[in-house]
Each structure stands twice: as structure tokens, then as C-alpha cells.
Length: 501
Ligand SMILES: Nc1ncnc2c1ncn2[C@@H]1O[C@H](COP(=O)(O)OP(=O)(O)OP(=O)(O)O)[C@@H](O)[C@H]1O
Ligand SMILES: [Mg+2]
Image 1: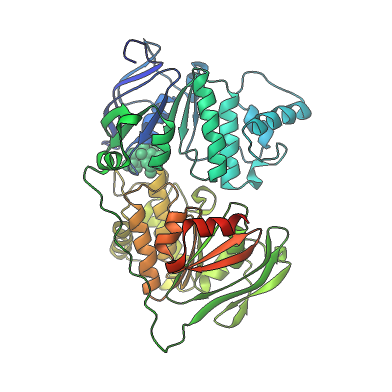
Image 2: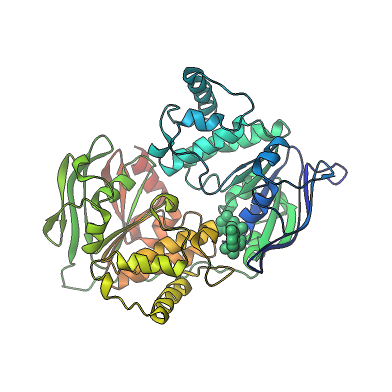
């Protein structure tokens, strides 16, 4: 490739925040018709490098070339004019506009008629096999659908280089197949692609070259074909990672009945949740597997008061035998039930506050929160302990949440809920966006909660996660539980079969 001029070239790129390097001395190049994957742990600097390429932030030092000519982009609009487009990790859509309007944003031609705009958006979405209604308001969409709109918009901008920052995180396996087809089509048209993912198998499968970042520095750039998954992990973390330690499962105590904590009976909400029934016991982790759209998230949200209760058409929820129906998440939290969301941007935290403040606010939101020690030193100690436990990495101790990398923000969402000392916890895709090294840590936290006697639910579309973390596995399909497995007898194939048939 070296005999050609790269479309994009960064030389000794550095970005400093508050005196600390987010990236340091990074060389990176990207050729037309190449898929270049960028991998690394949470906070390694992947998004920072890409934001600099896309003109969203300026480099502190270093040189930036487009087609051999040195450039300095002041705004994303400038980069877009040079043919560089980015799909951000955090949604950049305008929630109050429709899907069609968002897809047209930033495209060259202005279309005035809604009808025409929707037809065009429909064609774009259909060509990607994404099922999203062009006239829907973005604010009504879930994470996966927002991601699809972002991808369709980038494809619509006719860019010469497109950067995808974790585009596949909330797509289903089937949607990922379509997305990869799009990537290959774009590559065949000579478009240069940057692809960030924590799924190393994906990076190895789709990319021509892979660059690994660690602690803001480039470790290696090499042909994907020359790397194995193990080598990638080694480059990412700087040491060999042994397989996750076998997590201790709850040991059934002979003769003693298990404490039934929460039972859900025939819960129904519109077409999405239909006669959902299951029971949670203290001290166990129950995973709910299933396809996106199987009603898992909605069920958890209904139980935890995140949906208005008049949306519930039927069914009952009992907490230790007492019927409950929450109108707001606060009411559920007061009873010790928390929902830890997959969508940290929407209902995760106050992003302009520090980690410590967010954790403190999480605690204050509970009924007994006011009794919590308000001494700054105590607050710091508790926040610090949680951050250690979850391995949150920041450049500065007092970083605002918005300054954290995507994966580290996810960990703060978890910390904020854990400080509420719940007895029933719903985790919705808890390791989405979390790097391979930190995933076992989160699993350990989940197992630990169960061994402390809590009832834990893990909603996950990632079957290896389901198998490693759960004692019991429920499979949801079309709004109800269709199958239950003991973790010891479950296989990926068995779960998949139940989820589809
Ligand atoms: N606006 C900012 N202010 C201060 N620090 C920042 C800012 N943006 C990023 N950082 C810091 O720079 C480092 C690199 O972050 P970056 O978002 O590039 O990581 P990443 O590799 O994309 O991680 P992830 O996989 O979690 O998304 C992190 O330590 C992060 O906290
Ligand atoms: Mg990132």
C-alpha cells in the first residue's frame, strides 16, 4: 500500500486534556478502498483519534494530511466538505426531527417535500435492510434503531472516508450481516473506512488492516490476516489474558427453600409484552436471552416504573408477595428495585457532573439517601471504591462523566445504581461497549451481587455472556418467556433455537 498516497494520514498526533495525553504521538493512515479497524481497551484513545480525523476536535500537536496535503479542520463541517464523515459512538441525531430528516441532514441537496424526503430515506434504509419508519421521530426510537439511522445518514452523505465508532454494538447478528455487506460495498466503491469495535472477531473478519491503541499510543498496525484474536488481546492489554476465571455459582443450600423475591404474572403491554411470567429468587442471576424486539427491555422498564403504568394492560408484579405497580423509577428504587440501562445517554446520568457527584446523586435518589454521609471525604471514599471495583479509567480524578470514554461511562451507570443498594437489579446489556479485558470484571460484580443475596437479572443478546454469568436462563420471544434452561444444561444452539422458533 505504501506506493500509494493515503487518503488520510496523521503524523505524531497528540491530544491533551487537562495536561494529560488522551492520545500521544500516534501515526495513522487510511487508504481508499480499505477497511481499517481500530481496537483497544476502554479509554485507549480510539474515539479521540477519530474525532480529530473528523474535525470534531483539534489535535494538540501533530500533522494531518488529506491526499498528501496538510489540513487543519476547525469544524466537522470542514471535514465533511473534504469528504470525511463520522458515525459517533454517542448518538448525534436530532431527537425532535424525523428519521428521514436526520438522514438528509448534512447531505448535499436540500429536499423540501416531506414525501420525497421520506421516500428517499425509505430507499436508503431498505437498501441496508434496516427496519425503521422514515416518518418516526428519532426520540421514539430505541438504541439499535438510532444506530441504523446514523449509519444510513453516513452512507447518504456520499463521503470518501467514513468512520464508524462502534456501529455494531446494538445491532442484532442479522443486522450486522447487512451492515458488513454495506461496508464491503462502500469499500468496493473505493471509500476508505475506519471501523471501531470491541468485538475482535468482527474486526478480524471485516478489516484489511488493524491498528491497536493502548493508553493513547499506537502499539501496532498490521494486516488483519496476520493477526489472531489472542495476539490482538495481547497488544491491547500488554500482557496475556487468561480466560475469565470460572465464576462461582450460587450453591443451593440443601433443605432451605429459596426466597422468592419478585414474581411477574402475565404482564402485558400492548403488542410488545404479552403474558410475560417469571420468578426471581434471592441469590441467583437470571439471564433473559432473546432477539431484539422480544420485549425484554420493555418488560424490565415496566417492572421498574420507567414506563407509565397506564401502559400496562394486564398482569401483576409481586415483590415478596406484595402486589406492586410503580409509576416512576424512584418508587421502584425506594423498594430496592433498579434498572441499569443499556442506553446511558438517555437515562443514565448527569453528564456535566463528575463521577463522584453522579454516584452521590444516585444515592440521594433513594428514600434513605438523605441519611447518607455527606462528608466529602466519605463520598470520595465510597465513589473511589466503586470506581476501583469496576475499573473505571479516567485521565483526571475529577473528570466529568462526559469526558469519559464510552465504555467507562457505561461503568459509571452501573456504579450509580449499585450505590443505591438495591435488592433486585435488572442489567440491560451490561457489557455493551465494554472492552474484552473489563467484561470479566463486570461479570464478577454481577456474580458478587448474587452471592450477597440479591436477585439479579441480566438482559443480554450476547450468548457467551448469558452462559458465563447466569444460573438460570429464560428465553423471550415475541413478548413472552418461551423456554427456561438451567445454566448447566444450556447451549448457545439451544438458546438460539428457542429464541427463533
Ligand atoms: N472531552 C474530554 N475531556 C477530558 N478527557 C477526555 C475527553 N474526551 C476523552 N477524554 C479522555 O481521553 C481518554 C481516551 O478516551 P476515548 O474516548 O478516546 O477512548 P476510547 O478508546 O474511545 O474508549 P471506549 O472504548 O471506552 O469508547 C480517556 O481517558 C477519556 O477519559
Ligand atoms: Mg470510544
